[in-house]
Length: 65
Image (spheres, helix red, strand yellow):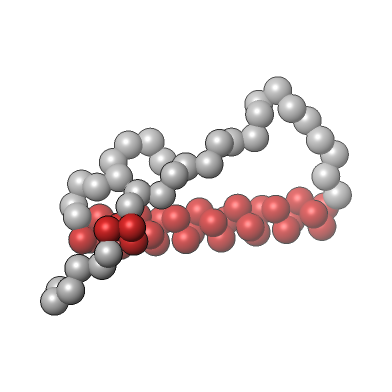
């Protein structure tokens, strides 16, 4: 590749904290479906970003996902 992306674009993304394991909530089905769609889209985008970063710098961002 002729040009390397700026360093900030190749920074490993932070992993968000999960929901508390001891919490509970009643979520209407439509809201639950929207939350699942958002979480899935975020995970797909994060995976794509990690693939790009690792393509530029093999071994980067290793560790728990």
